Image (cartoon, rainbow, N blue to C red):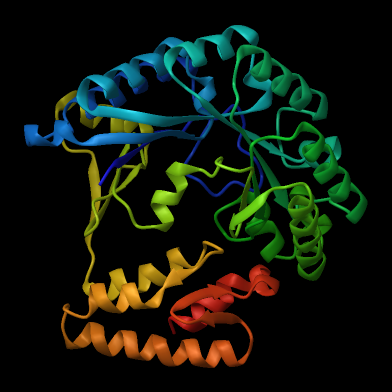
Length: 389
């Protein structure tokens, strides 16, 4: 089976109010040492040497804002990957913020081997962008896309967020319409996460008004925005293949599909996660600590979780059902039937929940093919939680 590679770059120009990731604003002097540490981690990763024969077919630079790194640093990391693993028709993605894109950078990225850009747009409304601490504005997005197209990029993904402060039905429909005018090959639309991990989320949960928390649209309004986008994107020819993702033909995110299909991937960098099919592990989250550990030749791994058969079985459902085409119950039963009585018992319990959720029209079961009901995707988290209760 082919391997995906994820490169974490945890640096940003500002900390967005809604962000709950382990990222931060640091001095640019720390960028190059960090890139060097990532390259060194890659070189030391392929042990035993037979691992060097593993074929990599997707690479994803995420963050954070990877486009902040000097293009030569990004190129060096890619070159190190090529010298360590075999590449086979790779999809190589770079996350970039619109205001970081210049003609020179775009040309350098393409020359280095990047063939897919994921743009963190979030909104086409300047008031919403300003309220959340984004650096770019609507005009920057159009300019960035023009530069990327002129440089030769033929695979661009654009992110939007539903539920930003001050978002209205009119501003949302305008953002979706502007997005469709740009016609990127791939679109991701995420619902705003309100939790203690972000400034905005914490303020909203506390009932406060800082960070424009009081201006977050209600949940039912956000659900309407999502449903409207589903209709408009489908009419424009986009394939809705995962809860938050749409693509033009043959433009699905090959890298992200590995996550939902539980295929192996390696993560490099501070806070990066890896999975080999049986075990999940993660690096130290603090970028300074990560660099220090690499320079001392000490393992950066701070968490290792060997999955039980029951945990792996549950992952098949809560990851696999994110895909709108669903999962094959017959395959899952077949692959997990030999893992002991406890797994058989867990599958039986989930199967009973499936029948209950199907009776409520929250899941659809066609033969052995199980999927989320298309008209209930906005409550997918609740459905999956009940399924695995």
